[in-house]
Image 1 (spheres, helix red, strand yellow):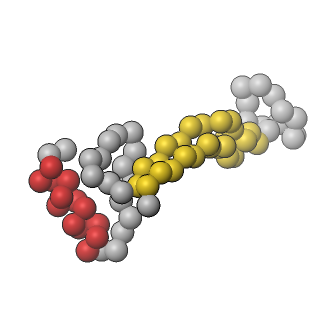
Image 2 (image 1 turned 45 degrees about the vertical axis):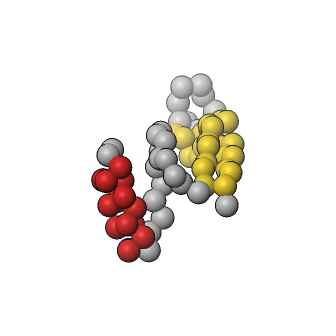
Image 3 (image 1 turned 180 degrees about the vertical axis):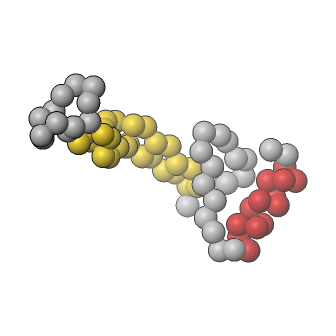
Length: 70
């Protein structure tokens, strides 16, 4: 994204009272940075409450989050 376009996006978010969160990228000049890493998953069993490898649904994700800035 060009700097001019980035400024326009930031101005629009600020005008609307929004928080802008950029994922999988780097945004120059930001005051706060977040980094997240997946540590594990919560699985809902598929068959009568019996955990079976490869079956079920992901019901949650455990993250390790680090932040720096103001």
